[in-house]
Image (cartoon, rainbow, N blue to C red; front, side, top):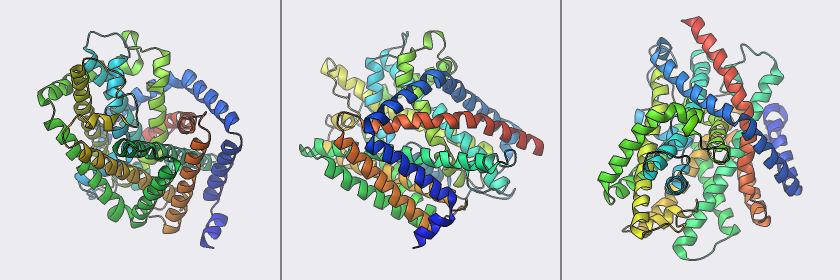
Length: 496
């Protein structure tokens, strides 16, 4: 009864759920029509706004570094005597688990090898270094700049201007129309939910692929549904416990396990080659960052490559930026803008660069030792498990990876449930548990429906469809980000 009362008295919640149900119904009963419409719309966005995404990404990186190095960077999120609510270790663990999570496992081997086998453009660099450099580019400063910009603007609104935890709070002093503000929040909720169900569905597919690889069996839809239920229950329990007792603890465990996995591969591989590749690719990334970000001259991979990779990544990071940025803002109370911005831009980027250097360089050496490449690492879902098969204790590594995948999916889901609950519970920093329950249940049902639809329509890749929805819904955020940044800059300059 409390849930029905909640829906009746909360227009933002009820309208968001109604739109999600409407979209789900259309996809369920008009699957082929929906697929064609989404495919056309996503291609239109990437074709006409892809380069705008590139320029926006570069602009975000440069703007954040400028803010961090300017007097504005001294602004503290909270009162002048506030100190960070979370230690640096807890803060980094939570922001990284929410912002990247399972993606670094999905792509750890597959993406560097793809870039080595299919260089994005002609270069005097070795294929190995170019592959790492371009992988760094797609997972580095720009991705975290999208997150960091939202975190900075929302953190300022939340802790300096004492606004509610909503994306619309960042512009409500300048845009007073309630329909416009509610529209921004509804789009944020829809995009967050689509991103979640796509990420959890893809993650469960990788876990199932790992289990199939380990056991030699071919588990199907039933196994994926059980995994989705298990992950959702863990995420609900974590979100129910809150940031301190749930999300923080699981995030710290994730990072410790990921570091252990990383160090094991590092120490059992050619450490000199890895460190050499890491340093060369990182330096080259810094040198080439500007022309790569503009796809300028010889650094232009061409429209087809950009559409399949960079434009898609930028749209994906943009789609995740509101929820991830708000979560980072929520855990950044007491830090200065300089501390938060530089921490978000540099620490996870450098960690990600080293991660891809370890797994990518080790995979390159395996391929060299085999005398050729025969698509061993082509699959996103099984490439990491195939990679571990070439190392001592492969079974243990695979089992640890399965648990780590579950852990990262849980921290992405629990932090998103917490943020969604803050949105719909009047922007409260600690939302009511009824909101956390409602969103946990709804997202679980959406994930199960997506997995079922994907299984029942094998001729249409439903998971790819949901990812392409993110590309479409990211466009309003890309345009809104320009407005939001302008309003933020005007507000802070007035206070200086």
